[in-house]
Image (cartoon, rainbow, N blue to C red):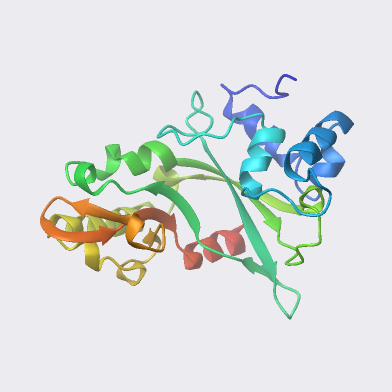
Length: 232
């Protein structure tokens, strides 16, 4: 099956993504795709195979193979694709369920980078954010998760750009001081350095200290995701 959008065209990608708003994968995929989805992720009809919902959206709707490349998902258009959940509050309003994790921080390489040409900006300077409502009930089939909204964020044109640059420099400053092991998400405002992993296998060397540090990734912090949602 060929994709129904032009991967070279920002306009085409956004138009195709907007088709998801207010619907579900079950309603928008073909019968053959639904069958392939179930065969792969619900093989025994009782328990789904593991895997992030966002990866499944990439694979079955945008026809992007799962990867860990340093380039954006839509490489030619330089657009990164992010699928992120919303939760329904007791008052009925919607709120971001979690931070939005971006790319892994390479402590040894990032200290020689500048923000404008950094690995972070290369990967995330233009981000297509697709929100869905997490039903919180694991009995609900992923094909029936409802998409809420689609937003395109171009950091350089955003009013938040200068704060992202400040946050990035603060994170890199701490690494340069040999304090990568002291990084905390509370250090910054919108761009965080969240941990990736939960044990000693997630420890990494840092360039200016012998102290090992937890592996970390850049992330759009929850408070920033909330601002984007309210703005949208």
